[in-house]
Amino acid sequence: MAASPASVTRRKPEEIMRLERLGSMHQSRLSFMRILLRNLATEKWQIHQTLFDIDQSGVGRAVYTCQGPKRSYSLIAFAHEIPAEKRSDRVIAEAWDATFCLFDGIPLPEDIDRLEKNVPLQESGRITETELCLSRANRSVRLWNYVVESLASGQQPKIDQIQKVGYLMRTTAVYGSGKFGAADREILSDRSEMKAPFQAEMLTVYLIRNFVLDLVQHMANEIGGRKTVDLAPQVARQLGIGNSTGLGMAPFIINHPVLFNNWMVAREEAIARVRSIKFASEAKVLLFSKALKLSHKSIATWTSEHPVQRKKLGALHKDIKYLTEYINGFNWNQAQAWDQLFIWAKESLSIEGQEWLNSLILEPHAELVDSLEATLADNSNNAFCIDGSRPVGDIRSIIEKVYSWALEIDWSKSESSAHTWYTSEEKLEPRLGERFTEKLEPYERPLAPGRDAVLAYNDLRKRDKNEPIATFLLEHPEHRHALRRAQICNRTDYGEIQDNTIAANLFPVDMLRAKLSFFGATHFDPRSDRWVRITMFNGAPYPSELAAHYDDLWIYQGV
Figure (tube, rainbow, N blue to C red):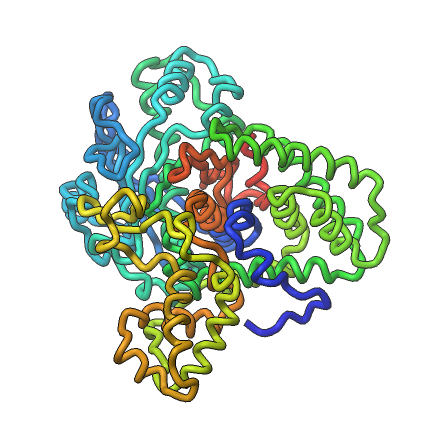
């Protein structure tokens, strides 16, 4: 990306690439869910239910086709009836209330028959290049039953009961990018509607939300008959799709340094552009104030039992109150008012509050922010090759630059390397073990870039600075991955997390939240340090509403 034309530059990597800050990030205009809906609305995509063959017990299949200017995509849904003891959010589960795939185009009956034999099996089944995503979901049983019973009895469910959960189903996986035979990312990368990251996955979840609404209404109709009422639109809007995400997502931002760099550069560039505005217009201030009020109301519904998140939420509630009071007397007529607000927040608010405000100040500035979505993807298909001709001295300098923070850590201390990342044999999913109590080192995955860079650096210091790095690697092939990564991250500003990912005090949920914030997730609710529940598309318009006036502040209206 070209250097920012803004007078205010992007924040430095050493400030923002710390896990504490990454784990405090919020959705923004550049989040993938919002990009998806903005484009669906702008391009007037039409979404229709083309099949709904569900019986009175809630078992069957359905198809939802999304038709755009050039292409169509179809969600194929299979609803199941499973015993309570088989309902689990864990990756080792083998049965779900519903399973799904996103089909490239409009499926024929034989396509649906083929997929019905495979999609309900998830990892045990196989799909083809005509399928873009594979997913599954479970009911939030208490809320599901409550909504069905309310509608069947002729009553609308109470909003406060809806808000306690926020979704009727939660997905436990949304697989794409070639997993289990699905289409590779390269197949989609040149399609305008799929250029931003994870658009196929976001479309899958959005269509699942529509299916869930139809299914719960169908079940209520089966029970209540004529006395059943339709779920009111204002109530339905409060229902998103839940998601349970574990450690499987955590290594992603480590394993994709260029892609994650692109996300962070776009976000930081957007913030810098807004901070550089010479004078804040009245219209922009009014829109910001509206977003602030809506966000305050939305965050008031967030709950968590985890002590870390409860503390962060408590600080955020105080920050919101403090900011609201400060704004009342704020001089919007001063030069670079948005930058002055940013500076005040940095000095006055918690890290959680700062990143929340950084997202909010982007809201009124679509003309400065939204074009950056074109820079988010990494479509390079060429594997990065180590430049073996570079001298040892150059590589040492790169490590000193990129990993200065890691060189300051005392890696001889047990707390500095307390954890081990490995892959489970049963599900081939990332796991985090205890280095000094579990014999896992032979299975360790290279997910501690800081430590590995320092190990390589210590051996490089023993060599002549003019020696080609290729010669060094012939004798020390164990350092290939670290030196390759160092050369990659030397080309990025934000490619590397500047924190110890195997430390005793590691809170892996910080990595989950960083990625999920770019998805557009809300209602972060860690259930341990290793998995989190969130809500997606809470407050979003349904397909039938997209054609009407589109309000991009829907993300704050799921309250």
